[in-house]
Image (cartoon, rainbow, N blue to C red; front, side, top):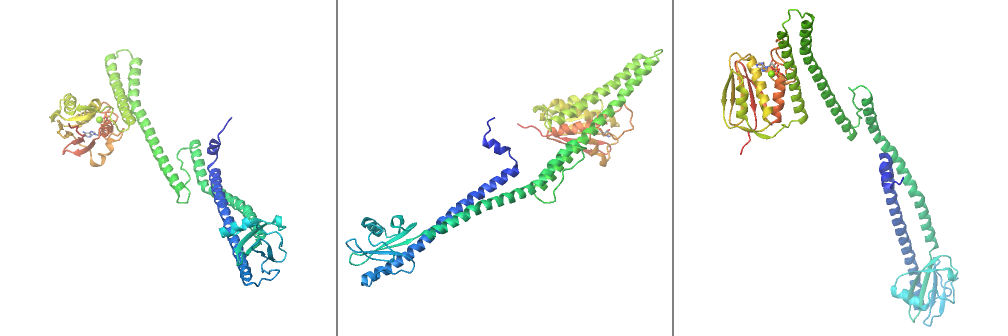
Length: 449
Ligand SMILES: Nc1ncnc2c1ncn2[C@@H]1O[C@H](COP(=O)(O)OP(=O)(O)OP(=O)(O)O)[C@@H](O)[C@H]1O
Ligand SMILES: [Mg+2]
């Protein structure tokens, strides 16, 4: 199967990729600096040779100008010199230098003179191994001094330097690659530990945490963040489990009651008042269906994650009037119009839940008030709720009067639904002491314009 190199590269492990990338960058940098080094070295060596050759040539020119040239000419450093007269004949040379053939012909001499710089010359035609640096100077009476210096030593030095670099550079690159491989391996070890820890969590019991490395680095904060997430998930799961067991518990008693009534009725059919049985069973069935509805309502609120089902303009005053009118104890003080954005059905469920509670606990009457700026209060004159329980009662399946008989009140979901719904509508709920009794205060944002 055809596979692009890029895809192959992406499939490799982080350790491999980091090591190769580091080694490649270092190799490039070293190669670049090696080539710069060699060329600078070459330049410097050439300049030194040119300078000393020029000095030798100048000394010879001075002697030629003064007519004190000896034959052969003597130089200290093996520089080859030819003095050529105006007719192109070689008049003086250093020892061992060709007397007949000039190192540079007339045209080449003129060119080098004009340039004023040393030139490179292949020495092989003159039986000299390697290359020569050649300087040309003009002397009096049309004479020309040609000085040449073999540079085979320079070439040898450069080749040696090149060889050292050629071996040293790859060795350095390999050293760095090995060091990177080891260091990256060390760095990645805590991540491997995290991965293993995470794998263990899925295979074994839940209440587990990921290993947190001692170093205070990114992996440490990743591990602590993930552990925080795990504990939040665990809590959520525990809450969920609690909710399921509470719900099962609440379902059990009406079901047991239905079963008992039916068993008794069927066990002793003689003289049985079937109507009474049916009424009892119906009551329990209503309880069950209320519980199912409340659970469904909460599940929907959870699902939506704090957003109402609809965002339509709702006449809150109308909702309050319609919901409260069904209760004989209700006394209404309602401003109109009060328009909020949201879901009318959800809001009327809030009212119903509050009215149910208030009517159940009140001694005489229930006051319902709605102000123009969206503050709704439901006040009863019953026993109220002690301050320390006023937050707790909003939790699901929380009932304070646990000893009550089963036909009073429900599962303890009413206030939980109230709070979730009001929150989804962008409002707040609080419980206050009405001395005597309880006042529920709900503030909803009013839609204007
Ligand atoms: N107006 C009130 N006066 C005194 N106590 C109250 C009042 N309203 C609620 N409570 C207490 O708060 C608890 C929780 O109320 P909530 O409405 O959540 O549940 P519930 O009425 O018991 O059941 P549900 O509403 O699901 O039928 C009630 O059990 C009750 O003890
Ligand atoms: Mg209630």
